[in-house]
Image 1: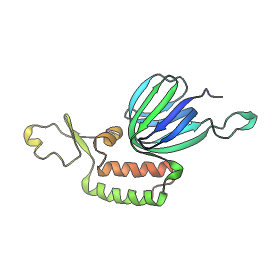
Image 2: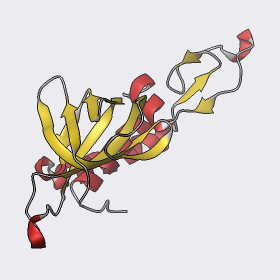
Image 3: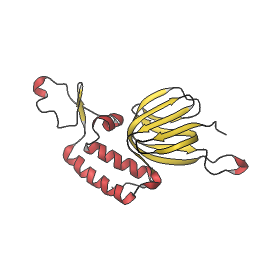
Image 4: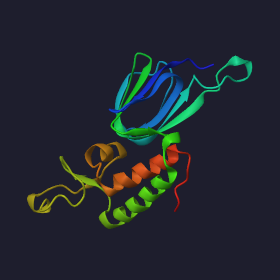
Length: 182
């Protein structure tokens, strides 16, 4: 049986999860990560990601041990803090996978893909992060070439971009257990 630890997922509006878990997985700016009990301390920027929490408060399996029911959430950026045998996820916006309106998420994805086709990816220049197309005359001032934003930086620096909208819609569908229509 896995060793339990405290897990919390909090937004400004509500606490989405607070309880015992035996695993939390998500994507940070550094990549995919899974947290188990007694994980080393960490503070990281949260990507636009599905947060999976295997809760110990789920059903009991054979022999009385927990099955570890997985609960999924769509988180649209924020931060994760790990320390003191606890994982705290602070998200500006997040929702439970079982509360997502799949039809609405599919419509949002289609709309965001159309917008992305017209706008392209969000980028940053050397030291001045902005969405693509918002740097008039940058080349004339010797700005460095732009580079694409990582998922967490996209959520933090260009949340209104078409690229972020596509990513949010895809994550909402994944958290709801639905497939994105091509």
